[in-house]
Length: 178
Image (cartoon, rainbow, N blue to C red):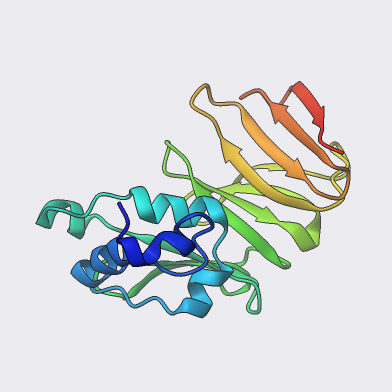
């Protein structure tokens, strides 16, 4: 739900909607417009759809932030405290990460654009799976998503394609979009 004065920004979410500000305020999370602008569209939509009406929901609220400059992914709790990070400091070699998704299994799918790969890690930072060279020749991965059927979708902007892999990491579909 948006206020009438937000109608012009509601379509592309270039500004932080009041409903998201309210949720973040209730959780004690401070998010600048600059940080919001760096978030991918999927993460913006996730924040918009996130629950935060009760104390229990607020307590469980976590936010993931991709910090391209430091080549890491950060997780903040409802008190705005850094609770986890994945990147050079944790031994995970990321280069220009672009996006992250928390999967249903509480793992992270990190789009590691600079290394031309997608990496799946657990909360401890252990690498569970990778999609990329040499087995999968990605050029410029920009997004990865775990679907409800456990397929993994990868958008490779360098090749103009969307690639779907089964849970066994077998190619399921390949769509060209240009």
